[in-house]
Image (tube, rainbow, N blue to C red):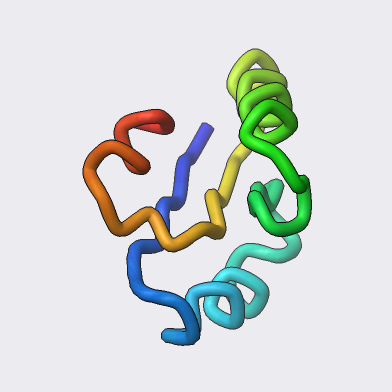
Length: 70
């Protein structure tokens, strides 16, 4: 299992990098796409329980945001 946690302000290329490097090998979690913290958490837990590689494609700029996944 692998967790990739891109960090940066909006419009810095995180989603493009994620698409170019991890599209075929990782599940992409994105709060904009999932529309809620609850859905993001449910999918994250499902990936953890199945040892699936994950990319959390959010800004993740604060320690608190990152701490939910680490």
